[in-house]
Length: 198
Image 1 (cartoon, helix red, strand yellow):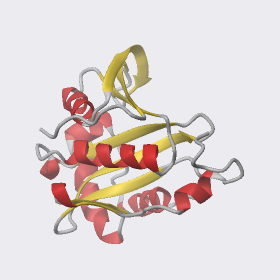
Image 2 (cartoon, helix red, strand yellow; image 1 turned 30 degrees about the vertical axis):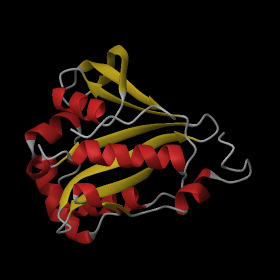
Image 3 (cartoon, helix red, strand yellow; image 1 turned 60 degrees about the vertical axis):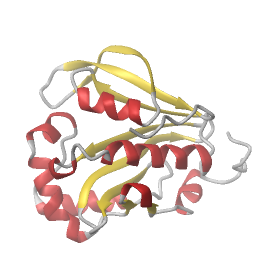
């Protein structure tokens, strides 16, 4: 565990301290908790074929309300999730830290971008921000992510966010198509240099 976090501090307490909102002024984005007003946008995002291929989610509004509640509840100390919104507070994507292990100083990051947010650097900015949060506030030594090898866009996000490609995991995850896809493993170690913005 990081020396910055006392041994007797529960992960839930560490996450509860937040921040639940992270302003990315240079990118015109904000990471925040999900709002009820996000539900219609989430329906649109989760019915998009690209989103459904790699990051499926519920499309029924009632199920989405429960999903939003679970994403906003960080109390189990294993995850933190943010909606990514633009300068008009319109939801353009999502980013999360999950499988948080403070004892090992390790966490996984996940992300997706809504169709109307793609091609604007939304995901790479969000991943950079939560990675900095994990390193600096949670004391994580290592932040990693996985994506299907065929998901070229996600590979670009990882590189632009400063995650080195560490290798390929063979047939490591079964995606919604029922196929176990090969995945790339990318990671950042505390102290790795941040790439220049592209």
